[in-house]
Amino acid sequence: MAGADRGTVRRLQEENQDPVSAHNDPVSTHEDLLSSFQAWCGEFGIHLNPKVSIGMEGTVAQYGMVARQDIPAGEVVFTIPRSALLSQNTTRIREVLEEEQQSLDSASGWVPLILSLMYEATDAGSPWAPYFGLWPRLVPPDLPMFWSEKERSELLEGTGVPEAVSKDLDNIEQEYKTIVLPFILRHPELFNPQTHTLDLYMRLVAFVMAYSFQEPIEDEEEDCGKEVLPPMMVPVADLLNHVARHNTHLEFAADCLRMVTTQSVPAGHELFNTYGQMGNWQLLHMYGFSEPHPDNINDTADIQMTVLREAALQGAESEEQKAKLQERWAFLCHMEMVGEEGAFVFGCEEVLTDEELRTSLKLLCMSAEEFAEYKENDGWEEDEDDDEEEETLTYQKVACMPLSWRKLLHAGAELAMKSYTTNLRSDQCILDDPAEYAKLSSRQKYSLQVRYGQKRILQRLIELTAS
Image (cartoon, rainbow, N blue to C red; front, side, top):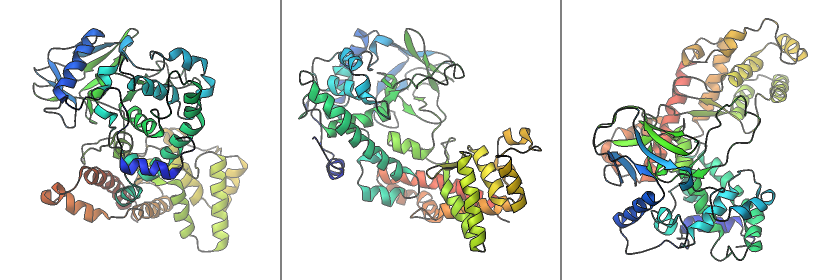
């Protein structure tokens, strides 16, 4: 696979071929695989609370965990010793990875873990064989990176997912060609380029995206200058599904990890973990699903920063005004408030990039005299109300912004709304018709929920800023 081009990547996506795996048994049922995995858990010291069960029955998607009895808040549902975790520090090739640490450095920081997975997943003698056995043929989650480019464009245009996937595919190919494949060729005693292919690498990237965990840094202020801890695979914990209104959370202790209930869970109900405060587009991009509206209380919509600039330029009445706006935009870039690939992020109840939005609207709507003074002071204002600047920018406050600010934000939200291939009303009609919604594939349903949630937020902005 040396020198594989983008066409090869696209073919692998569309064919969705199964990779070579050492843990394939075509006659095994899910029950057999689960039984082997649970036996492995016992051997590795993973303790499962008898009040819960792992399986596919009663879960929202594939494997999950269901309460067999009522569980009170604060109860530990399972404990995982750190020796059972699979990471670059626990894999059998950790010494080789440590020796070549510098050559494996990448923008993602995932290469050592994915090499660990490539090695362990293709060796029948791996201590983690029953863990990989839960996913026969190592078929990855149905992330948009495995959809055709045409399908991503038709279903997700305007959501930000196609652009994120395009970057992922470029980075995956680049990492494999320049870092992973040379490493594989240097270690023929451990790897085989015919087995450890770009296809397998892509699939394991998807596994890391969908199933890995990142240990939080305890003291963020003290460790703000340190590198982010690398991801790791956490058996059992990665089987829990996600909802925004979750009922468990993962605790990290010195010798083990514990999943603890955050509220009481009645018998027969599924236990849900949280993958973080993520909008639906992020959930679909990284995990292959989205939550039905309005369940995802963390949903977001973006207005690209360049879209706000475009809206300001469209409102200019002369070339001179356009030139002045471009000068102000350049100053915003100088202040690092905006960028060509940045976005203003709007949550369900507030603006998540409030400082960037406030500053951008302020500068783009200033008079010439105000901007001259602002620029002379390099962005500092003597009469600046620091308390107001630090306050959360809720939608109630958006509605009370100066008229010129509201007009510009209104124009930007309208431009963002036009970037979708479908409109809000057509999406609403499908969601309101159970028969029509039932006809959709899972990809179409997830994409519809992503688009609809974003458009609802943008529509609210449009209504709040209408003059």
